[in-house]
Image 1 (cartoon, helix red, strand yellow):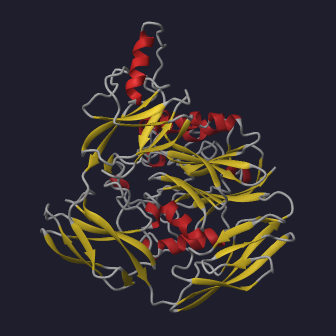
Image 2: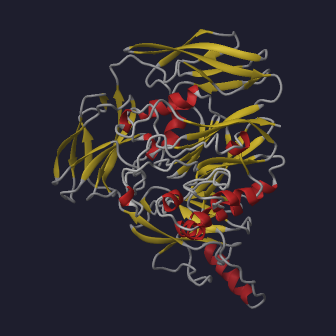
Length: 596
């Protein structure tokens, strides 16, 4: 009814005024292009023309959407989208399965603010998936039964962490932990659990090597006969302030445990669920002993809380970290990731290769905040108070509350092919050819779009510092110089590093380590020391892998770099990476900043 009224007003206005034409320069994206009827349709939007009456409407496709930016017929569902950027949801209950379009429209009218987006609504699954038990001991098989009216030799069941990267909207998010084919209209199957940690999981029954549900997914818990353990025996929680209420948690670090306090100051209490809370009475390090108890034993840890009398966070430790498919390429990856973050005392992280939901999984275990898309994410020990949806298909951003100041942290993952160091060291291309290849890779366009999207943050950086973290898949012009020749080349102005510099961003690693000859800071790769082929250079297989610095933390604003280094754990093996202590194929960049 409301949209019919808008029609009357719009028609009446046509004879009186002519609206100026505006390009649809905003963005509209959906969390998934396929949604099960009954689930919420989730979307993100951004526009340079915010208005309290901007709105998003859903139409059948083909149907009566405003394809010519004029009214054709009423929307099926709609919601206001009043800000310069944000997220929203539309319910799909009662709608028929089929194709639809989503439009982002200006000021109660029909002028496009972004190109429309296509969405498919799918019918709820009608088959059945059952488990012999919803609790399984790690190492024992998961036994399941299934039925479907759509038998296929490539129907399959997959196991995912919960929450995790399962196909929640019937589209792929990330890889399953283990899987098995389930042909026929009914039958049984088993899934192995060897090597899986205790925790919550979910099983999906899916059609024909794809991600369409054949039945609603089922949840289970995997338990362990092993004695419980913390990922690290000593670590630091987020800072506290004298006289202010404090809360942090260790409850996600030991699954299924009950927690007690074994030592520490009187103001700090530990709940059975692992919440550490209280109001500090004096400044200094508060050291709290915590015991986790399960049916199989106990584990002890010592946590430190830095209690401040002045600003809450005088300095912080920032990390840019490509997770290597979410950490799934290494056995026990989640526990190793948690140990690294805790023992390195990390505060904020820009993540790449998020594998759908790795940041969410880490945040759940650590009790931290996160914001993610399928590939990039921001993870923070301190609260996230605002977010920016995906930019250039490759970057997200979040605003982090550090107490006296906020921080804007961007995480970017740029295109990986063609790869400049291969073109230089193997292909012996001219510098101009290298620049042309950078453009064809998409990286030059991506970094240009990201810097443009950061313009508001950069303008406000005098009061709110900004970090641009990421795996740029390209070297730095600060490393390829006359004084530090790489593969016989002199200066090369790699666009993905010159663009941030031209925007006033500073490369924190090179700020702390100005000499690329003595401190190369290579992040690709502590694992791959021998070239394995591909990228058009198979003839160079077996030669030394070109080592280079392709991961960065750039900054702008009232920050001082205390230190910066490329970091990893142990001695990673290329031959047997599954056994590595280090869960990535990149080194991470760790920069310590002091807030000025």
